[in-house]
Image (cartoon, rainbow, N blue to C red):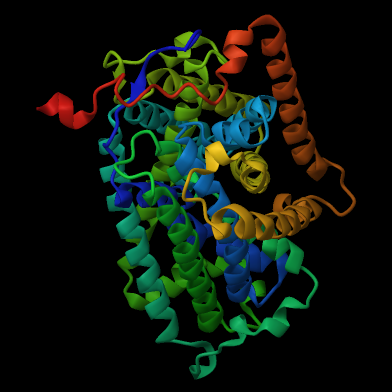
Length: 485
């Protein structure tokens, strides 16, 4: 493999449950409950948020089928990069890799604004100081072996899901008007103004479920990637739909939008207090941990993209360097890169005096979510055009023909709705051109990636030939079980 660095991530170290944990923790149920769902109600005024979640999840799950089928066959840590390189061509692969770095990096970095604002509200101080502490914590944890991160994510995810369950129980045992309303699941509520914005918000809150594919090289079983991703999309959408429904039940479907828009109402904590006052501070602490673990999940994915692309020479080869010789327990070069990007971004927003939530968190998370949705759509296209050598001998019609075709239709519709309602996501004034900066940034990044691939084709054909194909042989680097013996 000329021009490639012979290092591999530690194989057979991440179980199927661990894969699911990374995807679910990246989506961060506690963050969606505390911030996402109230924001959807307050911004759009749509009552049918629960059924919207279910419909959006169906589209995302179909998109995930082709994505995970390709990820399983390609087995590349930079999943979108490897998928498009094999399915659409090497230039498309580099373009996808660059967009993925921007998207994952934007979402991960946006969370520093959210945690800075959250800790400032709870303990006082300056938001960027708290954000800087979080950068250091995530940076130190990110260079450790993946199992440490997995255990931390699993504990926090379990606590977050427990709190969501307590919230739902508190809501249904004290419904507004004394009766439980099912209006949130009434499909007639979809035919209202603001539904496009609700769809865009729901899509954004589900982004992150694609994370398991980036751990393909470390997975005990590659086939579990598909199950972890699709199950994550369906399960989390169910959790979010029920939580959104419960919020409407507790406040009243016709009043929930107005109440969510009122900061004094304190949603969702005012509802959670019905289960016992001590649940509120517990939820506040869990929210902080949920933000940190979400950052850690996205940090880990970003680091693997940098590592894998550097290993093939598309990025500077020294970024693939890490401790542990040829068997890498953590891609330290990529991890340090993400930490530096986060530190510079936090410093830039702080120096500009920008609001950590309405500017940093909202804009960067929206940029990232839009980029990941576009990449999921591109992965369906790659699966549909993938050659027989990629599909394998047991290729099925559902994974390689039907699901990709349906995914292209569903993904195109969701992306159009998301781009068209970017103003709702960002809280921009009607008619503002600023929301269209997001797709412009993503498109510009893809073009630059394609241009870099063309440059490599002319100047370094050996590197160009290896794009998406740099994963070392299973016999080149020993597995964890071999080392332990």
